[in-house]
Image 1 (cartoon, helix red, strand yellow):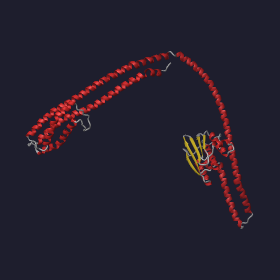
Image 2: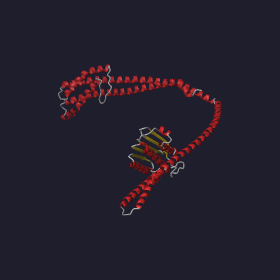
Image 3: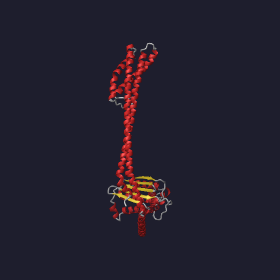
Image 4: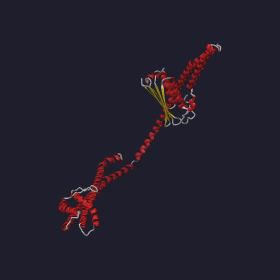
Length: 489
């Protein structure tokens, strides 16, 4: 049975989208017309108000002109009206020109569209306006005679009559435009309602009927559901058998992993045995030889008298040899297990390692440590130190590097360790196949430590491009005392 969403989408999508587009288009068109009408009506009302104001201004200017040329009016009163006259005169003149030329832009730009009838009325009023303009200007300098006063009154009457016709014409045209828009809006309303009715009968009604049909199908599918349940029970039995096989495979995998862990531990122990042999050679070839030298120097000193010329030089040589032996013993002890690591943590002991490398070689060591807490678990600190010690030893012996960078960063319960150098580098694939290589043994020891710590190890190198070791180690917060029997320090 086809799904409801696919069937409805195929049958009704086109009609539904079309109906919505029609309704949306009619609504948007109606809004555009309404907004345009409102804007046009606002402009029309402003134009009508300004046209009506022209009548008032002409009456005001007529009154002022007569008062200014009336000998019975005091000079003080005339001065008051003289101050009013310029603003009224300019406003009357500018408004008339703006209305006549369709350029009404004060206080803002308004749309003025004069019809032919209004344009003819402005042509008729133009001579009267021009005559009044001249008479008002003449009146402002007190030079009106009785004839001029009569002309002002006569022309002002004609101006009022013609301006009244202009105002009524503006109003009639604005009303006509509003009535047209109202009729068009009514048509849009009927179209919208008709579209909604068509949508209801041709889309929603079939959809309701189809939903009823689907519900009837679902009601009659109980037998199919029972059959499906039987199939599910059979599938569960098969799944249980598969789970048993999976458990068996998991046990075999665990045993293989356990064997692998034993192999890793054996490899780490082998590495430790190599380290012990190296420390034994250092003790024999370094400290042992120095102690033998001390013995010989002491025997020679014993055979000399205090007054003998060689007594002082032999004593001085013995003193220097003892100091060298003490320093060599301290270095061997430090390499075995630095007490600074247990007492103060990684940063001080790595600083000592850095200073030791820079003092005994020409290699510069850059150390960057960013830990959230000052101390990690003892086991983790020891293993990180051993990893860095192993990596730097490989660099010192084989890389011929000029710089070593050691970075340690703690973030989200993970410690990131990076050791990189700018030395000769090597082909990792070639090295890993040469089991007798000292570099291979060192890298294997580092990798084994990382795996036993449940971490990850990545080595990147190429001839003449240096070497980079990147390690991620999880922080085991439960191991606060540094005890982990699976990891040999």
